[in-house]
Image (cartoon, rainbow, N blue to C red; front, top):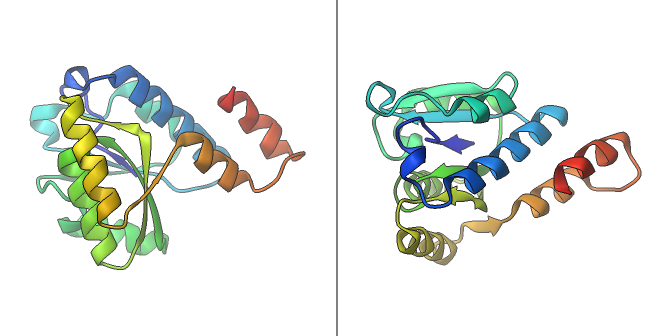
Length: 170
């Protein structure tokens, strides 16, 4: 799940390009491994669509517009999640301490296993990002990194998937 990596928000995010680069790698790997992807867009009329290079990294991603900070409070998003029959949700995006945080906490309360990709999350203010990460950790959200995710998805070396994704890791 990619939360609000949008045209008018992304330029204001500290280390935005690094967040986008990690997000693109995760999306390309997800596409290769047939892991479904969902994008949320907070008030796209005002903040624009998902940043094009990030959007292009995914194939067949669902896009859900929202006005609530937590995507879990949007019926359309929850319908998509139910249709995918996912019980685990991997989250990255912007802003860590607002939409990412509220979505992660709500999904956790609803019984989903929530994993936050810490190196693929950003906020305008680095302190807000750190406090958002701290709060999520305190609330039981599992913090992971891009490499943790990729190697867990792969499970083993020596496969075609491993060789393909290894290029993304290096």
